[in-house]
Length: 105
Image 1 (cartoon, rainbow, N blue to C red):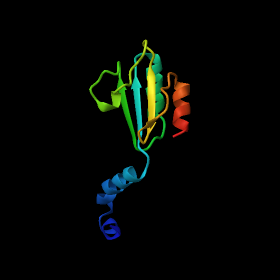
Image 2 (spheres, rainbow, N blue to C red):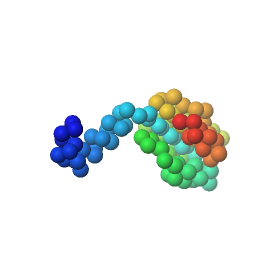
Image 3 (cartoon, helix red, strand yellow):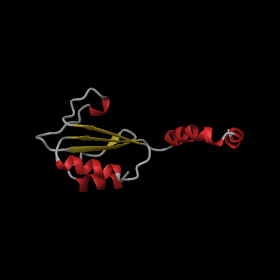
């Protein structure tokens, strides 16, 4: 690939991004709930550098996507589920807890 990279550098960006995704950890973050705490969690996620992340947000967690399976807001409390390579922390219920979980991935 080195020959193609030097001959077509701008065309190789997708290949480099795919290789980066393949070689590094996959991070899934699911935020379920409503209200100010959810909004603060989402704002924190968008301002954090988290390469290869997937962020999914739901008001209730009953969406038909596999990321939302068995992940729901309980008693109206917003929950953020942080997973690295399909291994998840206990759900965070505050921005500070979310920040703590993210610092460990």
